[in-house]
Image 1: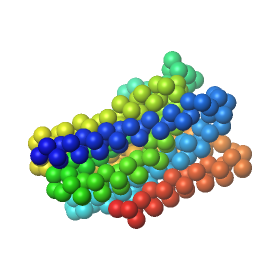
Image 2: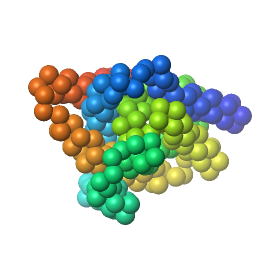
Image 3: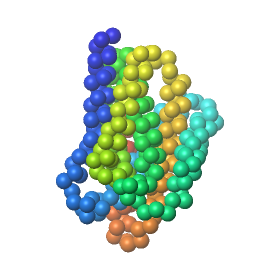
Image 4: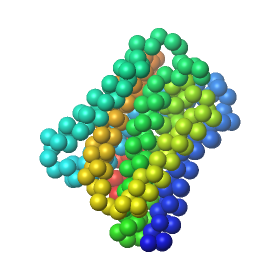
Amino acid sequence: MFVEWSYTLLSVLAISVVSLIGVVTLSFSDERLRKLLLILVSFAAGSLLGGALLHLLPEAAEALPDTRMLAFWILFGITMFFVLEKIIHWRHCHVVTSQDHPHPVAVSNFIGDGLHNFIDGMVIAAAYLVNPHLGFTTTVAVLLHEIPQEMGDFGILIHAGLTKRKALLYNFLSACLAIVGALVVLSIGISLQGFQDVLVAFTIGGFVYIASADLIPELKKETELRKSIIQLIAFLAGVGVMALFLLIE
């Protein structure tokens, strides 16, 4: 059991450290970062939808063969994010985004990505409990999946008005929920499969809502043809990267 605990905790720690990949932008000037901002958001929207529909949805459909229940939990996730947004008046906020007044998409993304990381931790721990080799393979797949995801998440947090250092901190705290998910499975075992399946469906709803209700509307504000084409390419790149990772799984 010591081996499974050690390998699992090392793996989820590595996954969490990946969230700091945004540190490469700390040397960028604010002007340069602003130019990259909508590209990062475009990439994030594509990767969120790609991750939700290409990775999480098949997993949820296999675990919840009753398509009506699957649809219910996805809709529940969308609804809960919508309710949360309305409670704190996200859509009716007319204050310009700033460091002192970050727009709540940061909170929305933190919750959605936190749930996703929590599930990743559960999956990795469960795989190590079955077989160390399976655990290692699962870790590599999740790690490669997280690299573009975390870069996109960092872009979302910057777009929401956070400073680069705060965005790194919050992204890392969200990623650390993978450790929590792993500890839950290691402590109780893999008997939480039903709970995990519901979380997967809920996370799908959250990711779809963030991408379609918060990120894509921002991208639609750009009317210049050249920049719009760049955004489309970045969006398709986000989807494409998630599609490529299907070969690893």
